Structures are given as C-alpha cells and as structure tokens.
Image (cartoon, rainbow, N blue to C red; front, side, top):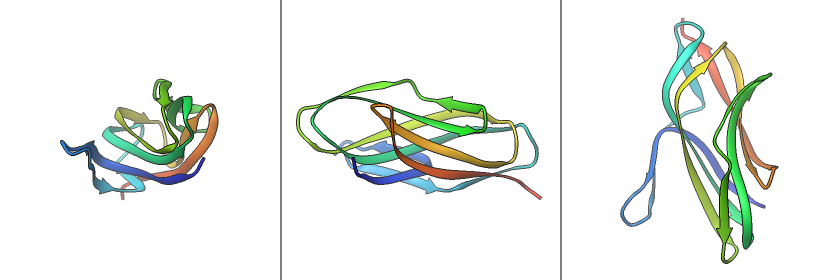
Length: 121
C-alpha cells in the first residue's frame, strides 16, 4: 500500500463536488500548561488501496497513552486512491512531547507522523 499523504489540520471536509478541502495544516500544538485540552483537530490520510474488504483506524499515542478512532470497514470494488478524514475532538494531552499519529489498514501501519505538543512560554 502506498501512502500519498498524512496531514494534521484545523479543518477538513469534502465539498459538494467531492473535492478535499484542508485548512490550517500544522505539526505542533502549543499549550500554556498540562494536561492540555485541544478542542479539535483533523487527521487526513490518502492512500492507494487494493480491491476487496479492509479495515482502517487512526491513533495518536505517546508511551502507554493513546486515543484512537473506531475500526472502519472499507470495501473497495476496484483498486485505487482512498482517503479518510478523522475528527479528534477534546483531546486531553497529558504532557509535553512528541506524539505519534499512526494510520493502520488491515492492522498494518501504513503512515505515521509526529505531532509536537509544546509548552507555550
């Protein structure tokens, strides 16, 4: 499976013409203290997927702490590009540091990136 992109952003949606709209791309969240509450973020992933049944989920983790989306079944009638838009709301980040954003298809890690949670000076 080839991953085309993994993006963290403030907002993402498909418009009436099924065009992907992404706003406020970032790789860091700043907070005055911890635990830090982030009201919302989107994770957008686009990847090549072979035909057939699949299961996808995304998680954000650091050490033993993690939050993840429900497992989502996918049935592709033909091979090709596929994308997911995940909305994470009211995430409580327990501490400053690097958090891994990971996307899995059929229990296989297909994409990952680092989300920096930084104490604002």
